[in-house]
Image (cartoon, rainbow, N blue to C red; front, side, top):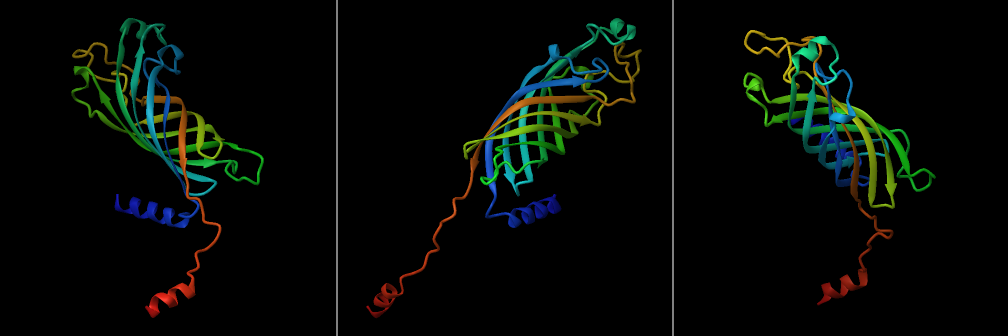
Length: 235
């Protein structure tokens, strides 16, 4: 943790004069893939939202942090195979999610000398999720899990004080029990059987609006009036 703080301090010192800070929020939907869903199903999307804080180190690189909440769900309706149809499992619970990602902009959309005020971007970083309102089948599993968020999006500069963005992101987990299905003792939990070699994933698709805080440079340097200073010293 100490090395991460030192690294961020160095980045901040490099671009302190040109740095923009942004605060805002994002609204969108969570979705999931795993033993119940091989692909994200629009019908199983659930409302989710994030609070967002962004630091722009340069025209190319930004660091975005987000904390949000939403629900993840899935079921065996229209299952992927006969086994899943017989299993008939379903789940839905709350997910508290945090991420810290670096964003790479492909265009210099903040430069007033260039005609474009938008840019596609890609992002990747680290994150955590905490499972809430889960059933007793999760009692043997840690509710706090690490994730690797990654994805792409598009940003648009609205005037000089707002940034509007849309993105699609995935969260790679290291956990095969997001949906409550994994390889287990079916004599104890008769629905707990799936593919143990595939970890579960969940996705976030959303729209973000942030307010830009930036330092307005003074066009003229301050030069003290020497004659006034001399009069003060004489008195």
